[in-house]
Image 1 (tube, rainbow, N blue to C red):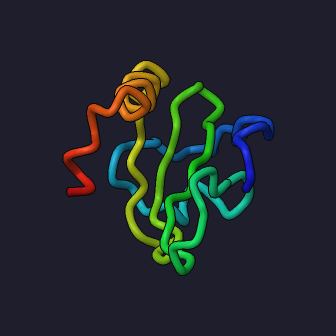
Image 2 (cartoon, rainbow, N blue to C red):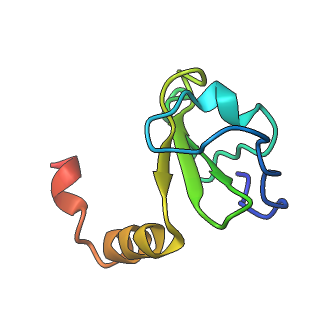
Amino acid sequence: MDGMTSQPQPHIRGKRIYNGMPARELGSEGWHKPWSGGNGGNCLEAMKLADGRIAVRQSTDPDGPALIYTTDEMTAFIEGAKAGEADFLLS
């Protein structure tokens, strides 16, 4: 299992980073699978961007859209999931 411990992705010169942009435009380096497991390879990949935001993409569709979250948004999601607030997604 990889952690998100690498350095942030360098600024992408001339490119605006936005929610839903093609993940390939963020490059292929720096993506990690922090939640991979025995799910047949279907997992999320995440990348910490130079400005502190976090990009998430589906590992089976690395050219698909990247969802961009602020650190506060990702913290709220992870803390909520740990507290059981997202359990309804699994039932």
